[in-house]
Amino acid sequence: MTTATGVRIKIIKSPRRTRSSQARWVSNYVEVRTPSFMSFEATRDVALKLSARVLQKRELKYGEKGKDDLMDRALRLNALYMGGKANPQSVRWVTNQNRRWGSATYSKQSINLSHRLMAMPDWVIDAVLVHELSHLVAPDGHGVAFKARIASYPRMDEADIFLQGFSHGKAFAEWQAQNSGHYHGATLEEAPGIFDDDFLGDDDGDDA
Picture 1 (cartoon, one colour):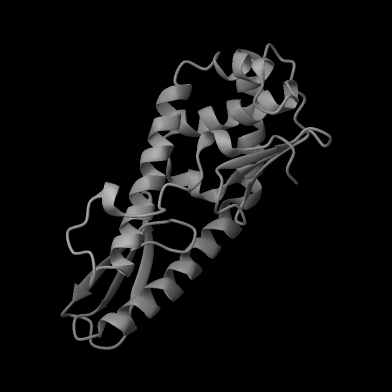
Picture 2: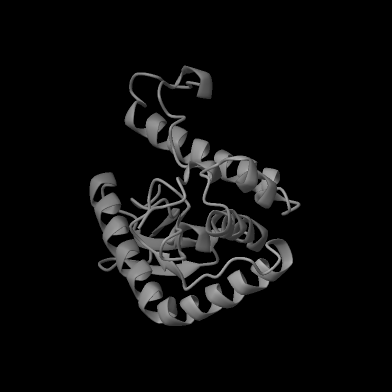
């Protein structure tokens, strides 16, 4: 089960709990403990509600610190892979990007990263940052100059595959849950229209 923004939810049915439910952040997912007698529908509703609260608290707690950390990270990557040619004025986490991992606005020299990346390995986050920094240096969409820039990051292709795998797995799990009564045991090839989620290369380089 996942939240609307793709964060995994792990539900634990506890016979010790007789009334209340509890949620907490564990590593890269939300753990929700509910009474064992609670129905599927009630458990789902409670899990989504409590998970939203946990994520909101994390955003409030780490939001400002996260901005500073991201800028420092972007400047380091700029020096390593862009030759210091990018001039990012703003690098921040956002919660309204659920169809892409990041976006860059050349005119404002700003970068937004989806908060879903917080759960990803550091080298994947770095790959997305290098991708967006490249848009700030090479405003040719995904042209020759841009591709030359992202190629400087040695794990770019690996990160692209990683994020595609994550998106495909998430989309298939959601599709399978919605169609469990009709397509029991379906494979990825049998699931129509699920390969349209966000990948590293979907950014148009000039989004607010």
